Length: 190
Image 1: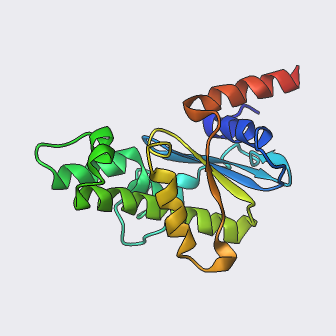
Image 2: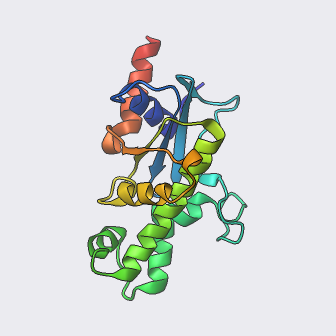
Image 3: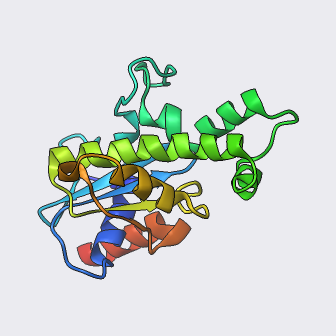
């Protein structure tokens, strides 16, 4: 069975962790939100290869409708697309996500938009911790690796009950984690 990009990235990040662990999630926050899971030291693909589509976990039943047909999926609240959609409702002329991050220190509304995204990812992380007893969550993607994003996610996680708090770290593969993971898997199979 083939890997999807987030599963490949999850495997790369898992084998390159500084400390060996058993249970990890990789979350990419980019145009969308995706992920990969490593459980008991094994990449979890699922029977149909669907495992890791964590961007479609609903965290707000009153949230925006998602392309998958549900309401309030993490992807509709936290992705780069979601940030851009919300930003366009507030800023005129519209600002890019890159610009939004650059003005967040001085602009309360920009900071609020970014923190809303980080809060949805934090809720996803704590839900995954409660379900899978994760040791760590690795975050990548264009939004996930933006300056200060991971620290905002960790701050939101730290406000949750202790039993579901989980540390988050930046992807070591940066923007290339999925390609590196696919290459690593190919080498393992040969």
